[in-house]
Image 1 (cartoon, rainbow, N blue to C red):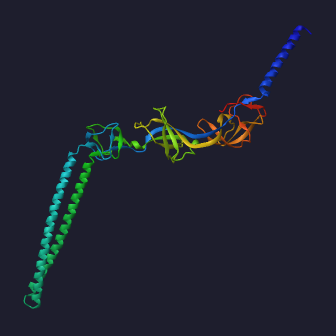
Image 2: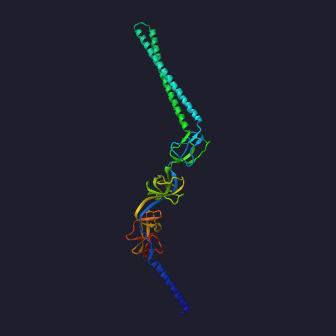
Image 3: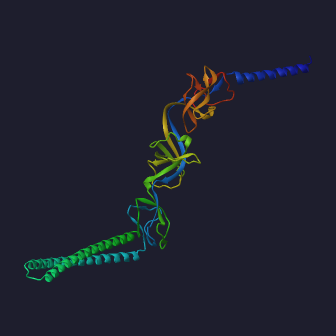
Length: 387
């Protein structure tokens, strides 16, 4: 055999030996793996993205139309309930109030006149009844003629009719007085409508008109918000919203204050979900919000739905065939790698899954999957690693 052939054979043997060493090192040697470690007091949170809103916000204006002559509030001002914040030109309405007040005086005089006429009618009736009684008595004694007695009876009947008319006139006069008073009240209400009052303690978000503007009835002049009703409206994925309950603790991070977490709690859960985005509305009331706020500002919400006293968590990336309930994980059993189907419970925000069933006793769940994983291969657990 020539030297050249010997060198080739020796080279092939060397390459084969190196390949064998690589194969043995890669596939036969025990594989070092990281395993999941039990964790305590694990907070299960749900994330939602939304905006700062307010439960009580109002666009208010006048119920009547006229020119704007006075403004007492502007953007950012705090107003108290019942405080006058704007007025309309009211000269014409004030004249109508004065006219209706004069109408009350006239109606009261008419009532007095009707009462006097009624008293007179009663007196006349009493007089004529006495005269008629005397004439009827004399007629029975044949002292007066029948004609005189009949005349006395007729006068008494006429007086009774005049009394009935006087009573009706008094009732008409009293009704006219009530009508005049109602008209006065109505004109006073319209006059009061020329002054715009704050319906509750509020902050002025916007002023839409300036002095001299002619407003139509119902046209918005101010936008108000009750500061104590400011909350965060978060949109939460329906797949994560099942565990949310009213009263649960929550944290809110505003876009303008990314380093600060505001404490709050769930105060309302929307009954109707968005049919397009498949999200549920969750409202978070702030327990210690800053005095300043900006409606519509983006907010990140973290809702704590549960706290696990002790849990074994595995990253979702280490799970195969996960269907929200079951999945397959790699475990170390008796020093060798095995695949096991397990049952999952809660899920953390960082995509770790709680194993609640299906794990054999003594098995350690592999948390990261290095290359070379295969069924039955020897494995050893890395020390001092608790991912």
